[in-house]
Length: 113
Length: 115
Image (cartoon, rainbow over all chains, first blue to last red; front, side):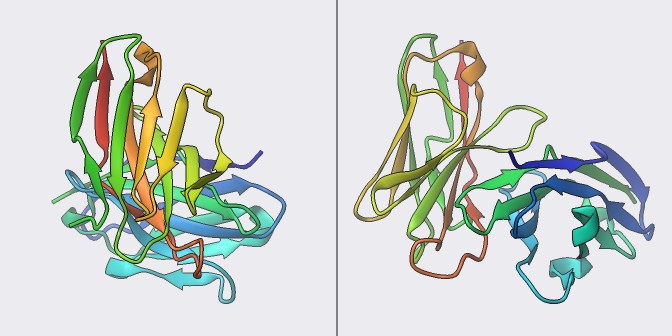
């Protein structure tokens, strides 16, 4: 069965620090990969997605993620975080031959001003 | 504005009761997926509806059922409520059915508390 692992449940950073959130999935077939973000008091929203092609994808607000197929990983990165990046981040995977998207448990990021 | 509308926002029910949650998808979306998010966990897939039929289901008992209407809106029904059903229920709409899948648009959820 598919599963998604997010390595850190809570991350605390100071502003301007670099961010990397780990995500690994278990599935042997072709997948679509996503990062969703939930800012305090808001609904879940799509941050970025990978379908095919360049394994380095760029999303909104300066976020990017790299798909490494051999490692079954899709880590999220940002060179310099801001206080406004405080949120919960969810990695998700969808089998291209199926319909459901599986989510990880989430990582709560707190950025100190 | 989420684009996906869920009602009610909050709900308190007693064990053994039944509940119906409602969702209106984003304009232009034809597919509705329902998720359960327990405290401190990621969303868990309940089922997905397209063309008024359930086309994939997660590991949830038959107490969880749904419906999709011709206008693509959807309902989630839970019978014989258990304390463990207390969670945030999320509706996500997408364009899987007839178009390229771009990812979900989520609603703000319904917070269900079972007492």
